[in-house]
Length: 488
Ligand code: PLI
Image 1 (cartoon, rainbow, N blue to C red):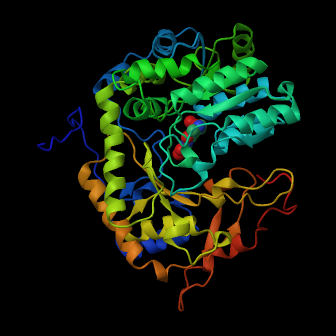
Image 2: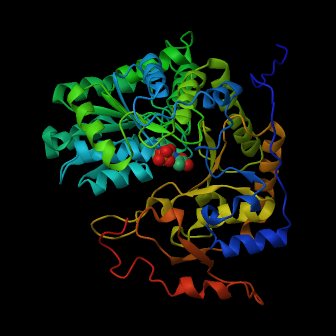
């Protein structure tokens, strides 16, 4: 059959220049940033794959919507447009806007979790788990075992292992489980989807025990696309229909609209239970703002409402995921170890296989992200032992099976040529991988340490004077003065 290529369903109307730097400039920048790509200045970055969060390109419709912002303190018309969009595309009854996803996680966790509760989920997410823990809960991982092995090609690695959940219920009792937290597109597993079949089975099981399902719907459209592509019975259903069906099996959702919905800021909590809604809209005024703006400008809510509608268009999502798959296949063809199957929002490099000579205690993924930056100015993110943090009770480092570097693709921002440049840079690092050495942590913040932690090479190169500034950080106690308990 003749080859038929696909192309993006848009043309580009406005561009922003990007600038390349020299290797010397990047060397200085990464050292000054304590080998943490979060601490780089964006102007020192050529291609920014740190995250797909808040970094997407808005459409002309979204920008036009920004001009229709009704910046009233209360009852802005844009809130009602957002509420309509959430009801139409997701089917949830009640909406509380928040400044971003973690704002919604905070409110939900405070309302539903009591001290000593267990919150099962299909793998942890950093901010989600922290809010659950700060509310007195304990996260329990109930994702299928396949999700922890980057080499297994099982298509629905986001699935819940129902036996693991049944065990938890038997052990703790359903009354200790306020809800099961289900992410569609499991970020930390490498952008892996959950199947509709699994979600339906989970609904049946939780119904039996009177347990809620809360949906982390940050990348639900991408998950729906994978269901359309891979799950029996869904190939002739639209992404829009599949998204709504997913939501119908859940009781409420937290959303970071900075991803699927392609806004630079925004999120919400959506629920079906009226009492929970009442409680949430009361709590939101303490932390975010009035319940009709939740920390957002009217224009932000308008752009979000429009972005939600755009996010479920089949052609958009096929191109979005198609670009990620293009990069993934390029890396696979070159023999680069990446998480399989290729994810939907980014390509996740397996740092354990890429740098087998660096033990996990020496932060191979952190160092690999730094090396990729050094090579070509491409910024990525560690998703391994640094992101996993410490056990809240024992203070010991979580040691996740997955030690990954995430090349996250913002939506509608970069071209196929950028993907080629990125792949070539990673391949060059792979060729010299044996020279790459481990890191030691010199500064560790108490919460979500991956954002601000600092590192130094274990063995600085001779004549290297650029560590002089690191003295300040070296004097900070790694793990905190009371290293252990309370360290996340
Ligand atoms: O960054 P927020 O607060 O808007 O959203 C938090 C959040 C919740 N759930 C999931 C699955 C996320 O991916 C998420 C944020 N993710 C970021 C920032 C990322 O780079 O993946």
